[in-house]
Image 1 (cartoon, rainbow, N blue to C red):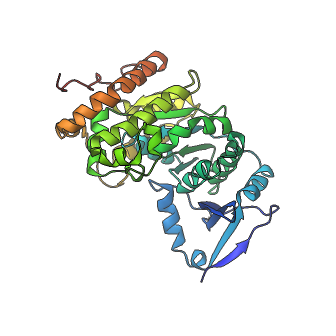
Image 2: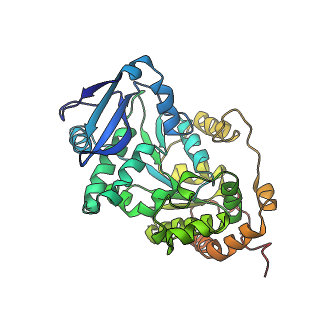
Image 3: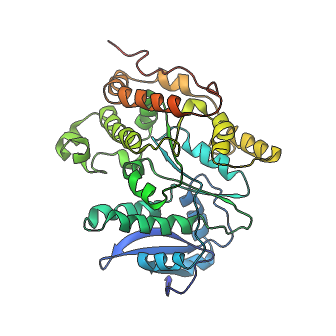
Length: 352
């Protein structure tokens, strides 16, 4: 049996982090887990949560509070200014960016915390709630997630789920001065990866098919590549529509990993020591999601695995937004334009 510990608005959350959000009695409720001073160094926030839940203390106790209580608690603490919000198309290097940043001991990086998705889902179950309400909730939640715990942290980042890009204006409302980074990749390469291992949000029915101009029956009848491409197109257009020149950053997978040190860090004002650069470079040598396995450039292999269905879907649904992203990136990019780019390959081997 797990004992519940009630939180009053005057309580603080030092050492505790929200890990799950759900609706109970018409209120948005948060479960909290004791993290102590543990850094969020795993590839994903939920990996850290899972390890922490194995602690005997967390097996016996948990803390719960309503979202309004979290807003009250956070209003009593010094405000946390996020240095960057990382959005992405999926399977395009965003986890690598997060892990390179997390390699610096003075950063806090919350990578795809599922508790954020629990809050975003409320936009559909509470249609009367205003954008300002959700922005207030997200500001309190994300600020709580990246609060320093180990000591000495001075830079704070959150990497979101690919689907959250569709809600990018709410995040920008919550953090108006924070750069939003959108990471993308050659569509055929992304579709090959998703064909092998689809993400949860990319299963038909996981999102409202009306957003794709489909009904559920039509969505279920589409082949996998076509459906995935339509979802990715929606994400690309959301990123393009919300892009703020001079504030936000676009990065193509081809620019990684060098872009993180040569463009992102200077752009965000992160002062890297020689040791810091070595730590980031050392982390980039290994696979982002499987630390300990050496990174291997898989671009050519992925393109060689693209089926006719994948190449056709990439051309039909994603060539146009990909070209727009590349145009915007090249127009507003800073730093060395030759930092690892290669020519756009979308459509290079597609049939007429």
